[in-house]
Image (cartoon, rainbow, N blue to C red; front, side, top):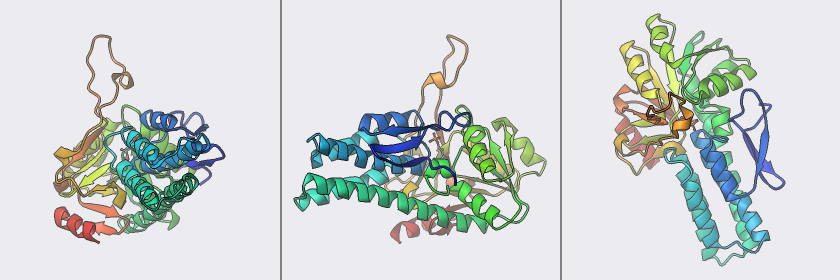
Length: 340
Ligand code: MRU
């Protein structure tokens, strides 16, 4: 990759501002908790795994700054993690990453560590979280590629690639690996209304990688399936719960219904960090509702703008994880996966 959506910078964390893509590739430096919260809320950094990585790196960078100012304490770090966790509600990777950061903070406090040790501990853990995501995405890619036959046309929704993970991606990881293996695939990327992550981001990163990509408006998905043009659908997820229900970008649910109606396999790809082993069913997943400003309409009209929906387990052919492919009955497969 010639770009990374996130990296360390001398003063903190450098992120690629994804709101500007594909028109402009601009990197911005963030060094405070407030700046990272704003970047996550505004979708400058986005995608479930990348939100977790960003929050952890942002916390580590802001802790270093707080130490320089004489403000750092374990209590400061825990409060900062709690603030970061409030930035977006649906992707559970955020909590997964911040739970790890809080655990490290408490361990350091328990050992009576000083401020500079805490800074080092938090930076090491943030880097470890990023490294773990990189490894998990590569494994997802290897497993998902086994589902992609030569010459397949693969439909995907939203953006679940490098831009969403700081690694190879989740749904797009299998596409990258299949492409590496010379399988001659092409991709149909749904536009993904209203913020157009498919048209702006998936198309940007796949074309950069030399992968044939056709963008369609979301409403065209069914007609392509009916014409027999789609061999499989694969998307990422923001939270998968114990019974196999999976929250992902709004529009994923109707895609799964369409795929079932046309006898097309519908796969979800996600790392362990996207599983919420504390929730039993999709109805418990908090669904982010975003501002009406993101959906321009006639003055006076009301807007309902949910950012995610839940695809019920029975519509999911299989879930591709970093630790293999989970097949129905998904509740049993997830229970076994949770215990590994
Ligand atoms: O609102 P976004 O752009 O953060 O939504 C992202 C998605 O829904 C992705 O499909 C999901 O996070 C999987 S990312 C690997």
